[in-house]
Length: 269
Image (cartoon, rainbow, N blue to C red; front, top):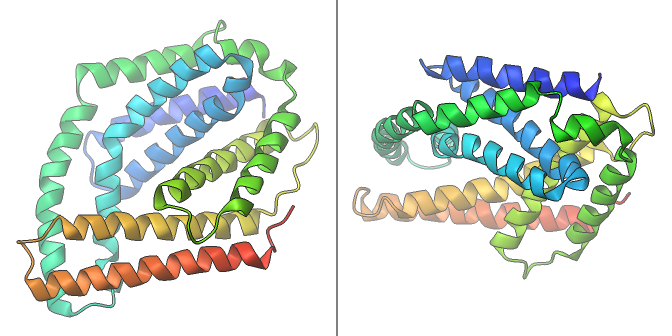
C-alpha cells in the first residue's frame, strides 16, 4: 500500500470512529479509535521523527491530545469487564463492580465533555486536514528515507534495552520500555504494509506479542492495585486487603514471568 494512502485511510477511519463515540455504547468502538490513533502516533514517533524532528514533535503532540481524554474510561471498561475472572470472593467482586460502575458514570461525563469540546474538535479537524494536504512534510520525504534502516535500528536498540533489565528495574522503567515496544510494533506494522518491498524485518512476531502481553500484565495489575487502594473507606477492610493481596500476587507473578522470558533468550534476534 502507498504510504499516503495508508495515512489518509487511518485519518479517515479516526473521523468515522469519532462520530460513533457520540453515542458510546459499544466499548470496542473506543478501543478501535485508540488503536487507530496509536498507529498514527507511532508513525510520527518512528518515521516522521527521522524526517523532521520539530514537525514530528508537533504532530505527536497533536495526536496525544486526541488520545489523552480516552485513556481513563477505556482502562476502567476493561477492568469492569474482567472482574468476574478475579480469584476473589463473590461479595468482594460484587462490591468492587458496584463502586467502579459508579466511578464510570462520572468518568463518562468527563470523557463525553472532553471529546465534544471545541478544542478537541479543532484538534481532530486540524489533524484530518493535515492528512489531506500535499504539503504535509511526511508525504514529501517518506519515500526518500531509508525506512528499513529506521525500523531496523529501533529494533536493535529496543532489544538491547530489554536485555539490560533485571529484578531491580523499576515499574516506571518497565512501563517506558513497554511503550517503546508498542511504538515499535505499530511501526513494524506500517513497514510491513507500506515499505516491505525494500527488505523484510526478521522480528519473530509471536515472540513480540508474548513480550507485549507480559509487559501489559505488569502495567494492568499495577494500575488496578493503585485504583483499589484509592477505594479505601468504600470497601471493608477485609475486602480491601483481599483485593490488594490479589493484585500484589498477580503483579509479582507478572514480573517473574517477564524475567523468565528474558533469561530464556528465545527472543534474541
